[in-house]
Image (cartoon, rainbow, N blue to C red; front, side, top):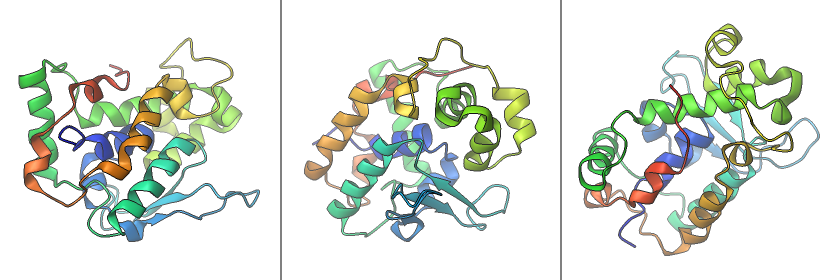
Length: 212
């Protein structure tokens, strides 16, 4: 299909809270599909090594908060054979592709890759139904900043989150979008092809809510 080049980046930034520069550098060796949570359940995790992380401190992002992202990455891993980067596009390609969303498809100009990350942090910190009382700490550890940053900038940033939303995709109300993304994986061409970076589905640019 012609219009799915940005889906991996959207999933990584919106559901894992990765920075743009981190997301485009991760390879499949950084994805641990069978990683366990504290109760020995397979939840998967993304490992961000120190040389990729902005803070120069390695971190793990357990995917217990987003089972849909784990399903998507598992299918993408199978489709790619574990070759190439997870995002499938470079830093420059990601920037050009998002600009095309704005210029060709009329996407919101105030939205960029950092907006996706901020959205993830805002919802993870504000949705008490996901992490409960440990929301600040859990969100901060996944995003790679301190709990004080989470508390100052993201706590209670979003109101009206459904009390039964126990996953990030449910809190964002994008379950239908991510299900479609998972269903489309088998048909996608996943080579790191520069031409694919500018073919964007305009609907994906509004898959998540942005916050100020």
